[in-house]
Image (cartoon, rainbow, N blue to C red):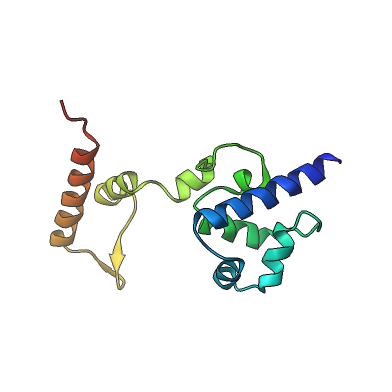
Length: 136
């Protein structure tokens, strides 16, 4: 077995595991990806060498809230995100902080958000920060 075969097998095992953890059938996943159920079956079958295209891999990572690196065996951490993903999709606390500071402009229907909306966002951010604070 060459390394490529090993990578494919890891992918097949992880895909099936993640799908079952979500209590999804192959049909459920095929509908989420808009592909045939037989495509999912081929990706999971150990006897086949089927492998998803780049777009499908990205979509699978999104559906299962993991990274492509995890799916293909480059990391053991299913929650791992690369630096680019972290910058493009920060956690909600970071995002709200950047919105409230003006670093990320926030518009609604092409109009600046009002002060009351900003106050509500600040209240949400404060609630998140309080929730994270350990109780003594």
